[in-house]
Length: 608
Image (tube, rainbow, N blue to C red):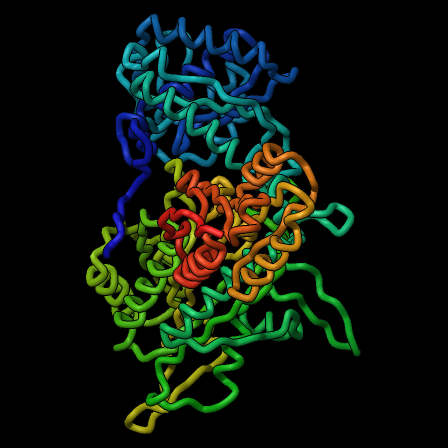
């Protein structure tokens, strides 16, 4: 069954379009950033303005202000913004000469705007806000502030930001805000923000004992705890099975390589800022790998290939290491050591369409197994600066489009947005609260086959260059795991839960029976445990629910005598008393079929 593939977030009772999807919201949010800047400069005359763009869910403006903005300041600024909106001030576009713009900026002592002006090409435009305030801007904006809904905006937070994103330059204060067309949209947005906090994978990772990042070991390095490691193993095993079924072979490659390899691949020239420094061993310099691609290329080049062997599909769960600045690392989403679900396909030019379609089918199979069914698909085409023949680019781009059309997925085209070495498809997934996450990538590469002089022997005996396709479905296991935790809010489906069944003995006398049942469950491949704390039944159940165990099996004297259990399911509630054998059979079946819960008809326990 084809998934509901959409081009935007549509979850929830109220639709919350992104700015890029709504020209009206773009004008509202862009205008609101100007209203924010005007309000700040009215209340804080020493504040200097820099930039104030829209974002997908709102807007922000960066200020250079002598004193930090406080929560009280934000309230005062919001109140002043309301007054500006109520005045219905017009926003008018003026086209000016460079000299006039420079004179205006100098008169207001706005050095950041002077720097912005230096990088602007003609025509130079500014927008006035009434007769009291103006800003360098290309627009667009609403006609006047009366079009802004004073009940549909909020100032959210203040954060630090460097001018031009450069850590060596001035540190600014960034005020974030959001704006919508209706108060109902704002209320839904606030609800989803609260949901995002409740689902935060960093908190759930700690509460559910899944993973940690230990400062003593270093920033951005993930420690998988037993429960998280078990889940990771389940994900990896499923990933491998899916790839074998799709005709892939698996590779294992080293974690380091001689520095010369990274010179040949071009990573040392174009990617060195994201690589850890080299290490010297036996008078040779080695480098931790930031990517798996060159290793797969070397494997291909280890022997001469025939066209009859193609396509070759190789996949690897390969751990890579990249330097990330301290300010951008975030839980599992941005780390310094992570495992990519990399694959590389070496194929003939005429095989591109079929291979891309195969990747799209596999992507859907895997992502839908984790309950991601809504995707945003983007196709990026040849940029101005690129390598490769026009004919090869045209063939590759046509192959990507053909595959997407055959798949029946709608997509957007980003003209000129491809890498210099080939066109690509990017797939974002929508989570349970409407957020879109960059996940899967399919990238054609004309660069590495050229750099490593890859060949195959064609039907006519000549040596030809293969087409190389990079692709990742999860992106990285760590990041996908974080997204998945937040999508499920830690309430995992039965097949994926680290602990599927917890046995709750009411008294010590029934523990031998619980241990016997535990053994049966484990032999059946079910992840089960006994709560041996000796607490009262109410507390045992609360603890199991807090730890989001899918099935709780209460065992009292009656159950031990009858060979039964009293079941409580997170998904289906009270299932009543069932025979132990029924539980084992149902739990095994749910695990093997990757079910979200037990398929179990409540049945009375047998008589003694």
